[in-house]
Length: 122
Image (tube, rainbow, N blue to C red; front, side):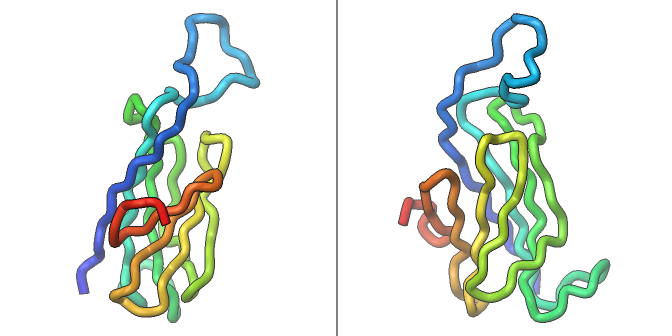
């Protein structure tokens, strides 16, 4: 099987960085629309790791300036369970695997939920 890719957008309404000196409490990303790209590897498809019975995901999170602000590779997510992905954003992006290959992947961020089948909030 071939990996499937899904590109999703997150509406993060945060102010753009100002020209003031660096503030350790300031966001470390460009505010606006953030996106992420996810590749789902089917069970036992990855040659570079022992994936076992779980789906594996490669995830890259981008800010509105298209800078990578979070990344993970080979994230194993068991059936119907959720794993969190850290980034420079104030909250984690949560990924929930389905039970079967035809089931959508569910995402959540800061109380918003959507899936890979519709792209709409659920």
